[in-house]
Image (tube, rainbow, N blue to C red):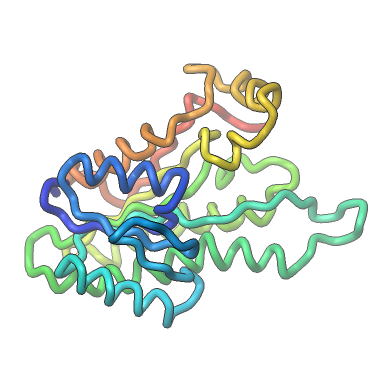
Length: 240
């Protein structure tokens, strides 16, 4: 699918990977509606809680009203916590675990299921492309990442069945599993901590640039034979 003149929604598009993706897609000629829980100044910004069926349903309707339809859905909305299964204060907080899975996994599915329904109306051979955000934590999560790793493993695990489910309506589904990226959250860490994280990355030995994630998302959209795949984007990092 050509990005030029396409119609995309990007969740979590107000910052980090989502903001970079929205900006890159627009540079390539796409119309983009950002879905984000935070308020924003972007004229095509729609506030939405990805965990709410009603909120996302309304946001999708607004996006269709703005663009006339949906061709692309990129899910970047997500949260992360660090908490051990059994720590100094006792067992892992269950509500915290549930919240991470609800936003990262269920939230992504909530958005894509409704976006896919709109894509199916496009009436073309290729009606749409969905790109979800997994993480290398899905495959080699570290201590304190049980909730986050579980949520991202769910993203990775549903990629193939989603692609198979939606093949009949001409919608492709892939996921990108980024490593350690220079998002606002990581940029808020002390420089020595950032340097320490980058030192474990084989090559290039630096944090990933959100623009690199955006370019890969664009390639997934434009490469019609990419489907049902989870693509690592991590500089050969394997966490331990």
